[in-house]
Amino acid sequence: MTDPHHGVILVVDDDEDLLTLVAMVLSDEGYTVATARDGLEGLREVEHEMPDLILLDMKMPVMNGWRFASELRARYPRRAPIVVLTAAEDARKRAEEIGACDWVAKPFELSTLRQTVADHVRGHSPGI
Image (cartoon, rainbow, N blue to C red; front, side, top):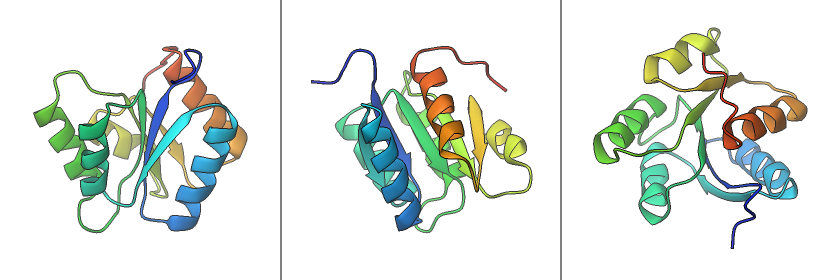
């Protein structure tokens, strides 16, 4: 059973090392973490369980972040907030393009990631 003070986080990123690191860090914080290496795998995870928050890379093979966000909106009236994880120069613009609630620019400090996740899972979403 999920800790009521934490939640389920879906991390969608094609960088295996980053995926492993983020999953480990968030698991250590008490979150239940699901991972996917592309948007298509991410949608399969959402079919299994709607997470409390989605951390989403934008540039991935098979299905990128833009398409994932579009498919998520089309399929689910109630969906998890999305935080974009991107190495793009303008991370804020990428987040705005898909209606994400926030962004974390790569490379990032783990403390920034932890705080961003905590803010959005608790519902203290400052938005863009």
